[in-house]
Image (cartoon, rainbow, N blue to C red; front, side, top):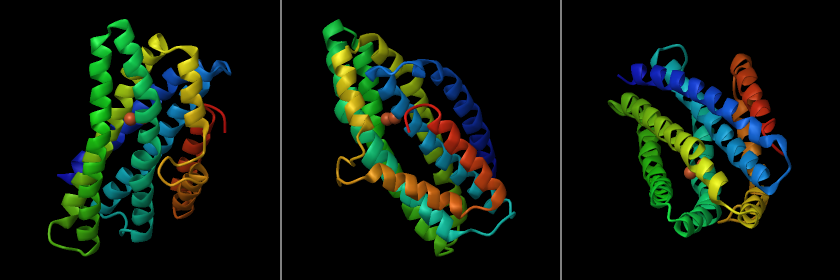
Length: 242
Ligand SMILES: [Fe+2]
Ligand SMILES: [Fe+2]
């Protein structure tokens, strides 16, 4: 069961990232606060997506019997997934993008947009719950408990699908509403927040820490997979300001 789900998710992921990247390419032409903010948001989405794709592909290979589980690699991937969305990316969206868009939507009487922001904010809370389940499944998988492999594979597929759906809604629905409704001053605040390196909860240069963690994941990979991840990094960085 897990095998079929993982293959399907991996194919969907690749298609969606291609679609989103094509749509995202054009707004990056100028150096306005809006375009700089969008570049960082999209780049963070690409970084997370590339690690999720890798995670999903690793689990598919393990289930198919093509490789043994590399627990150091899987644990490093989980460290990244544990921190990057819920401690770095989502808080910036909640505090700056979503709050500004809620205010602008209320000012314009756009109730559908307020519902959309609420949906995305609720999904941020769901993300943390899914992560707890994923990490419990990983511990059971590592302990080789009965049925732990299929439970972990299914949890991986569900987590990957959830985040891709979430990012797709943000890119296809929420960001276009933000482009339509937010003022230049609001974009300036959002750009400043997203361009800052600080982790909102921990302080310090955590953007660099996340880049380093992704680099460690890439270094743990065999040559062919490393080349794919390095290309994904290059594509993400080409979206905006390094
Ligand atoms: Fe989000
Ligand atoms: Fe996002």
